[in-house]
Each structure stands twice: as structure tokens, then as C-alpha cells.
Amino acid sequence: MADFTRLSDDMLIDAIGLAVKMDDGTKRGRFGSYELKYEDHYDLRSQNTQSLLKFFVPDFTSFQVMNQPSSSDWLKHHREHGQTFYDFLTSLRYSPDSVRHRIYIQPFSIDEELVPPDIITAIQSYAHIFFGMDVEVLIPISLKGDVPERVNANSRTLQVNAFVVLNRLVKLVRTDAFCVAGVTLCDLYPQDDWNFVFGVASSHTRCGVYSLARYLDNFGMQRTSIFKYTGDSTLLVRACKTLCHELGHMFGLTHCVHFKCLMNGSNHVQELDSRPIFLCPVCLRKLHYSCDFDMAQRYKKMLNFWTTCGARREVKWLRSRISYLEDGLGDCWHDG
Image (cartoon, rainbow, N blue to C red; front, side, top):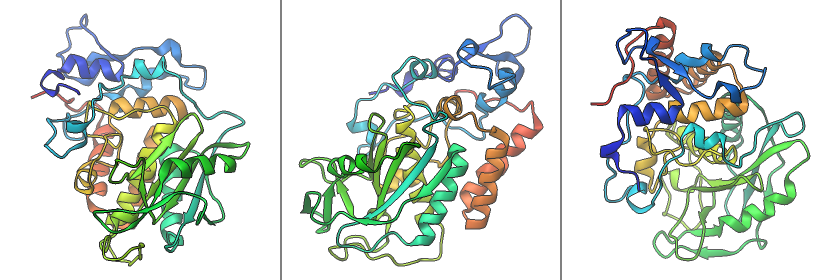
């Protein structure tokens, strides 16, 4: 388990893959006092890697260091040491290429109704922006009778084994697929002694699965999920968080312990809601290394998306972040 009292400036800057310039007299903590490490790992697709620097220097208004977990939080119950950018570079991982370059979303059901088409369309659009890749929705399927079921002793809801679903999805991986993400309103469990799981993913098989069941206001009121539109953006934000989190694992990103980040683990809905839908500098650099998207345009497209959806918290963060980047030399993040 990470010791959050020891996550100093130096450790966090090193985790991002930055170096502090000590020879130019610039006050530490300013944008100009940093430079990118591991430039030799980049290929010719990035003409000027130093132009990316400002996107990875964490300003204090946008990024918060992970604090000590509460008794019910993910990191209180799971020992995770974190993955630096260098760890990511030297790990076994997968990246899109000229053959495998498309993300597929596979809606499926058991006894409940399917995820509504407008929700599927929205998460498809956001995943396209988030990863900068083509995202295609497959024809919905039923897995009734094809995967193990149980009734959860606590919620009294129908659940299916998430890892068995993953094995079924492997058969649906097309030649041009970087990955396939199964989406359902059926609750999930990963193994018999677990209560539930929001989602699971396997980078090796390039498959993931996640459920929206526990994001519904009426969850637990009936055996199978019934979708009721509430008119706000809460469900959509949760859905996009979980999809992009699980897809992030397929790119080789592990759970983040450095900053409050989309890639933090979550034990419950309240913890999920407290996490941002954006990547911290450590995880952003990893994903950008794999996908090579236009960083500035990505933020602006995200702003348009969440403005249209009426997600005020996300819009506020993006406006602040874009303003900081456009201003250039703002104050950088500092510990304490």
C-alpha cells in the first residue's frame, strides 16, 4: 500500500518522467524549470517532444495529490505501489498500430433491458475523444444461459461472473480491434467471495466488461435493472469514468496512487464520484505515449462534450485547465 506521507515533490515529478533543471537559476516550481525525460523512447511521430512539456507539469489548481484513504476506500484494502511513466515504458503492454486501431463496444444483457442507445452513443463519442481512436458499437447480444449467474445476498440483484463474460467476448475480437468493451445493466461479480465489481479488463485478451447497474438510482429495488432517465449528467459521467478506466487498463495503465485520477481504484459509488474523469499527469503521459493524440484539441473536444451534457464539475475543471495551458507560464503544483 502506498505511503502517502512520503509522496514528495521529487517522487511525483519522477513518476511523471520529468527532470528538474538545476543550472539555469530558475526558481523551482516554475514551468521553465522542468524538462522531459526518456525522449529517446519516442519515435518520429512526435516532432518536438519538449512542446508536450506543459501538459505534464501539474499545476496546483488542476491536480491533487492522493491523500490517505478512509476505512472503506480501495487503497485501504488493496496493496498497490503505483506505476511510474518509466515503469510503463518498460512493462509488457499493448499499443494501437496500423492493424489493431479500433475500439469496439459490445452491449449485452442477461434478464434485464439493454443499456439505452442514447447512453451507448454518448459513451462512444467520449471514448473517441478520450483515446483519439475510432470507436464502433457492435450489435447487442444476449448472454442468458451462457455465463454463471447468482443472486447477490446483500442487494438481492441478479449478477453474472465478469471474468466468464470476458472469455465470451474474446470470440468477438475482430482483426482490426485494439480492444472490445462489454457494457451491460446487469450487476457483476469477479469471484465467489467478492460482493461485486464495477468492471474488469484484461490487456492480454484485449477485452473488458463493465456494468452500469450500481449507478442507477433504483438499484436494489428489483431483481434486474430498470433504467429510468433522471435528466442530469450523473449516470453519464459515471458510465464514461468506468469505460475509460477499464479501457485504460488495456493500454497497460495500472491503478494510480500518485494523484486523484481517473485511474484510481474505487470500492464504492461514493469513491467513484469523488474521482475526476480526467487523467493525472502521470497517467496522461502514458496514454499519450500509446495513442499520440493532439493534447490541446483533446481538452477542447472534452469541453464541448461535457458542456453539451450539462456536467458542471467537468466543464469547470476543463475551462480552468485550458486557461492554464493557454496562459503558458502559470504556477506549477507544489506539495503542501
